[in-house]
Image 1 (cartoon, rainbow, N blue to C red):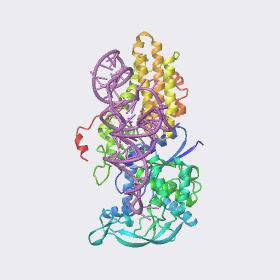
Image 2 (image 1 turned 135 degrees about the horizontal axis):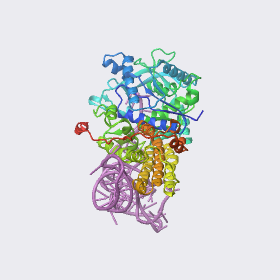
Image 3 (image 1 turned 180 degrees about the horizontal axis):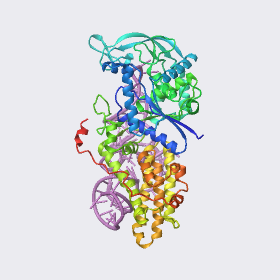
Image 4 (image 1 turned 90 degrees about the vertical axis):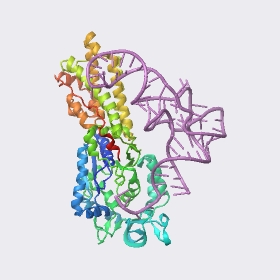
Length: 525
RNA sequence: GGCGAAGUAGCUCAGCUGGUUAGAGCGGUGGAAUCAUAAUCCAUAGGUCGGGGGUUCAAGUCCCUCCUUCGCUACCA
């Protein structure tokens, strides 16, 4: 068996429909997963929905719905989004699943066995309106000395029985982890934040709630449900079958990487490894906090601002692959990025339609018309051909994998584009349309050289635009077993040509996009 | 308030441990070509690298200060 690779998205909280941020994260994670498959690794990719907690129960209640039935519907929207966006997950884990409850209980009991859980009272300034506790220093003084939350709502001193996790005990182990494995938290800016946070001291964490019951019951402690983060994080284990011994868990845990949003870095980089250490389980290799996609004005997308963009509608409008390409190309992975219809149209037309799509089209068309649709024979390569091959080979064999290894996803595509540019420069310099009249053998060699290069570029970019890449490779007759990095760099052209394969009339891969005419409607966000 | 990040060509950004004429893509301009989705290729356009001060033979790259933007500052996820 090949090298295992386990990657996850964050587990989405479905108290609303998926927004562009969910789509972005799913796509980015999918691209990484697909790339590792391309490299021949055995990949597990887990995503899912985190359905417990007060907000879900409330949202359902407000809608007059049964909580689980509501969760079923909402979770469904996330699965629909994944299927729409061609997200190649292996497991979609729901926290309401019985298997997941079993896993959460197993993790809880493992932490309990380490003596890291204890029952105590949770006391603090509680805002009924916000349903949240606040620290003394966060409060402000209102009229008549009334204490107010940062949201301006009244708070009162409240005490509640709660299970606590000895997070304080893990301060030093965590700092040692960050020190010994600097790549554990990325990007660097997030790592620094976490470092400072942990260096500042850790208090024990309240890990159960008694104010609602929509969650995983704490074993042997009636009235308590687990703090949502305890069970949400457990999804990464339950998605592999934990605690079952004979499951993917034994092969794929620990995860190579958790892809999450920058807003939940602490839960993944502090609480999660602490829980795992407590339970005696191996720690994941890396937690990567990506940035947010901002609307053109630079505002964060949020429901309260009413500027939520439906990713399904975007995919319908521009196409799934162009949207995926845009997400990864335009945004420097790890940093915030911005989105606008204009930017999508510009980027996709320039790079997918004009540079790459047109390259394939002009090459295949010439073969179709000038070679009777048969793949042309190679009559000896010259130095120009060798230079192009060397260029492409370096790009797909070194530059792109290296950038992928660093999760510099936009640089991966940038490198790929440089290969596309090289092909366009080559075709113009060689001018096979002129060779047609002067040197037919050379024309054939040039077209064959391009054919090989285009197929290699198509395979290399297939994690980003899987459907389009397959469509092209289908047109080109590339057998499935060659659609991986090793295969496409190998010897397949001559056998394919000698097999008598013929092209169909080539058809464009990426139609040029146009801006929606009702343009300004979309800006009204 | 505390800690941190960032401010580089019209736009989006690269610029590692300081060292020849500060880079890329897009946009703009001028050519070439016509196989192709009016797509492509070539050339080019000068930005006092946020302001000021300092260290150094030498600073976008180190130090100080000021301005601006942003992030984190524990139990809503």
